[in-house]
Each structure stands twice: as structure tokens, then as C-alpha cells.
Image 1 (tube, rainbow over the protein chains, first blue to last red):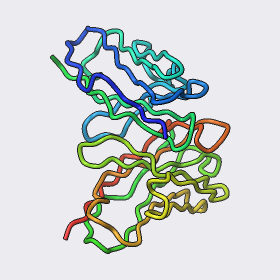
Image 2 (cartoon, rainbow over the protein chains, first blue to last red):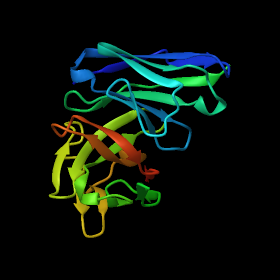
Image 3 (cartoon, rainbow over the protein chains, first blue to last red):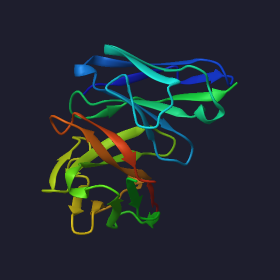
Image 4 (tube, helix red, strand yellow):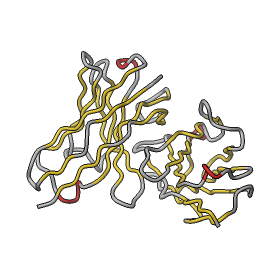
Length: 108
Length: 123
């Protein structure tokens, strides 16, 4: 099973700042099969990125994903008030599908 | 618009059985896998398993194999998650989600989610 470790656990930033979230895999994720989700309190997760760098439909271009192998990054270029949430990565290169533990982006 | 609407919150006692549902609309229900994801209180996301409603092909995460049963009724565009004997440790929010991707059953991600069903198991 591939274990995904997200860092930092919590990111305290102000609106307008840039956020950089990391997702590190315990072994290589084949074909960059990595997705990112955003979850706000009391809501279901929302798909942001798949294939490590492809934005899902309707996702603003301030969200970008990159990486390959074992190291992946989600960047939010300029934080909007609605971006403060928890972010999860998910690998789908091997079974079982696994998620990272999440990074909370909070208002500083 | 793709929609997945889940059944309402449940409060059950240990040992009881339960079946929760997830009704899809706005797309061809039989053409996409549906997955189930658990989120325990204050915790992260865990993949439980997926089903292809077209032929009911079902795959489980090893962590959940034998613990739950996933099924689907294509005539009503509804997927189900059921327990035969609940435990307190089953207390969690359960999400269904439409699957996207190709290749094997695990080369997939989740592009649309239900609102979640909160299951509380307490004596």
C-alpha cells in the first residue's frame, strides 16, 4: 500500500498570499496518477486536480499541481477567502487507492 | 448536472444492520463506477470500494473486505453500502462519489461527490 504524507499539517496564511502544499509518497506513483481535493467543514470533498497537473472542470487557474514519482505539489497562487479549507492528495497508481492525511490552510 | 444524493443520517445500536443509499442523476448511471469513502470524526478520507452499476462488478479495499457490502440497482440509479452488524467504530461520515479514469479499477479518481451520510453507532 502506498502511504501518502502531506506537509505541513497546517498552513497559516493571509488572503492574497501563495500556498504551497506537499504530498510525498512512500513509493513511486505510476504515471503521475495523483489527484487533489479540497474539503470545507461540513461539505464533501471537491476535485481540484487529477493526473498530477490537470485542473478539473470549473477549477480556477490559481490552483496548479505538479510533480512526479514520489513528490507532488499543489500551489494556490493567491489565496482567496473561499480557499481556506483542508486539502487531500490521493494516489490511484496502485491498489488500494490511498489518501494523504490532509493539509489545513487556515487564515493567519 | 451530475448529482449524487445520499440518504439521511442514521443512529444505530451496535449489532444492528444498516443500508445507506446514493442516487445518481444527470449522467448515465450504468456507465461510471461509483465509489464509497469513509471519513471518521475529525479524520481523513479512506477508500472503501467501488462498484460498476452496469454489471455490478465490485472491488473492495482490503481494509473493508468482509466488513461491508456494496451493491447497486441500475433500475433506480442507486448504489448502496450496507453493514450486517454495526460496531461503534463504524461511526463516521460516508461519501459516495462518481469515478473517473481508465485502465484498471484502481486507476481512478473521484469527480463528483454525494453530500455524505453520517452514521452514528452508539449503545
